[in-house]
Structures are given as C-alpha cells and as structure tokens.
Length: 305
Image (cartoon, rainbow, N blue to C red):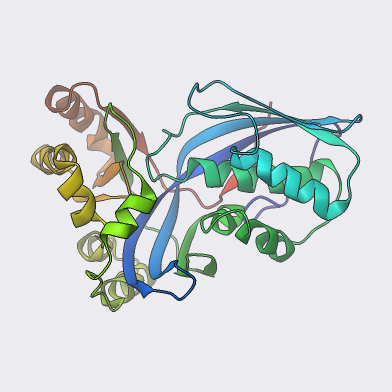
C-alpha cells in the first residue's frame, strides 16, 4: 500500500516512484544512551523521485542494477537490504531484480536511499502477495534506517525519537519548492552529529509552532517557523553552502534552509514565479543541481506504464 492509497500490482513486474523528502523543521533534543540523537522533525515528501523496477525471480536471489556509479549493488545498498530483510521475514524462496534509476542526488539529505528501501518493501509486499499491513512493514523498515518508516506513507508527518515515531499532520498548503545541491556532493551525517555534541539547546518550540501553522493552513507561518539545528554545523564545514543559501534568498526564495544533514538546500517560491527564479539561480550558482518540486501526499506509488 503506497502512502494512503491501495495499488493493484502486476504479477511479475512492478515500476515504482520513490519520492524525496525535505525537513520542514529539525530540532535535536539531545543524545540518547544508545548513541542516537533524540529529535523532533516535520517531514514532507516532494515530487522528485527515483524510479525502481522490481521483477520477481522464481529462482531466488537478489540483483540490484543502478545507473549511478556511486550507488552499490550489494548489501551496502538500502534497497538490496530491504529486499533481503523482507525475503527472510517471509521465508520467501522467490527473488527479485531491482533496476534503480537515481534522480534523487546521493548524499543530499533528501532521503533517496531510505525512500528506495521503503518502496522496495511496499512493492515486494504487492509483488509477492504477502499481505502485510503498513504497521507491520514499518516495524521492519525501522530496522533499516530512521527515515525508512516515513517513506512507507509519506505526505506531511511529525517524526519523533530517531524520526521513526510518526504522526500524520495536515498537508502543506499549495506551494512550490526549489531544491539546490552543490556540484561536489555530500557531507557525512555521522560527522555532522558528532560535531553537534554539547551544542544541543532545542526544546522543540519551533516545531510545535510550525505544526500549529500547518493546522491553520498558514503557509506564511510554516515558512517563518521552519528550522534546522544541523544547519550551523554544516555551514561551518561547508561555507559554500551558506553562500548558496544567501544567493537563494537574494534571488527571491523564502524560508531557505538545509534539509536533513545536507548537503541539499531548499526554499519556497510561488509556482508561477519558479521558472524566472530558477533562471536567476542558474546564473548565480553555476554548476549547482536545481529542481522545482511540489509537495506530494505519499512516499511511493506504482507508476502506470
């Protein structure tokens, strides 16, 4: 079941869209005894997506093929790990071939790997007629990564704990967002969180205010209350990202902030003005990857072909 809608699956082959996300807010409350950080975040799926083709293999085995040279095809790939975990949970003798067309930048904080894993779980649930509920899939997803459970449903959600405890929220009012990613990709999430040690002061107040704005359907309030506690740490290590954020604001983007631990940035724009704004951004940020996206209400879905 992708998001909030049921899908009818093909018998042997399934083509899926696995959507990206942004963090509308991200506040770190402190470090836990297990080494993870306690956080509150508001997550939102957006229309940028990877494309996965799942083909059931009667002889067993798991194959992953990806068109991105930096993405592995073995157990380091989250889609592979999701397929293996579900196969083992079902004692399933069939296997799967996963063909992955990457459109979500690697190392961006947009959740591409986690989204691919969630789409793989949901897709195999259909392909193999397993009949698992979304709640059952979430339990398995949480073992794969903190963001994976969110992508089973997507939309607009409050994430707590490590981000795996999810509460659906009212949808983000209609808007467009511009995603910006630097030409030299990536920043280590573990490094960012290590650098955060001793600097945590958040109490979740910004997130609560943002949720109130969502409940009121107040886009201006959402833009004003957005926050990311990791931004200062990332900007200190990647000053070119701070300059890019300043350039985005100068071009007219509002609510500019980092998503996750980066290295992607995003900002809000009126849909009708997005083309003109992106043209200005291309001049100001040569070499940067840019995309205009819109909010979506699901984490993954079957693509009708």
